[in-house]
Amino acid sequence: MDTAAERFNRAVGAQIRAEIAAHGDTVKGVSEKTGISRSSLVKYLDGERHIPVSSVYRISSLWALPPEVIVERASERYFLDESQRRSPATVTDLSSRRHDAPPFEVHEERGAAYDQADGEVSDPEEP
Image (cartoon, rainbow, N blue to C red; front, side, top):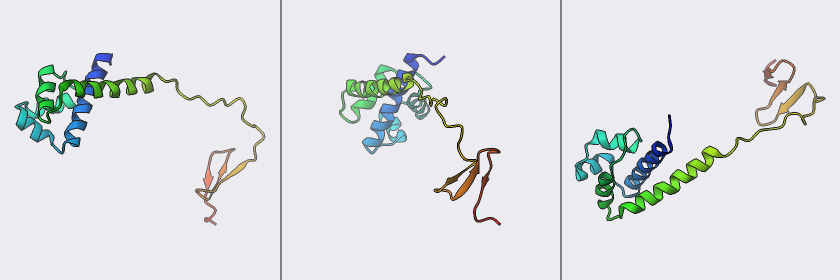
């Protein structure tokens, strides 16, 4: 099951990955500078493993960035993702659709005619 804690952990990993890129660093470089194994770091960044607070601290220290800044930015990322996740899907009401439409519609952007009866598209260039 995908819990809120797991989603937040992924947000922290995504934020650290963004910080790595923003500071012109690499995963390999961060791994070497912090002593965190590359495989563990990748799992943290991908949200496959929980990120220890001590690792967030060591990583953020590379850029003289307080660890709470990373967590705060990750929180913004998390709440944005959560709001999009919980927003209701857009539903198109088809009951108000016209049922007396002509049997063909011309799709100008494709230059093709669409036969509403059998759902086939014909190319006007074909004989």
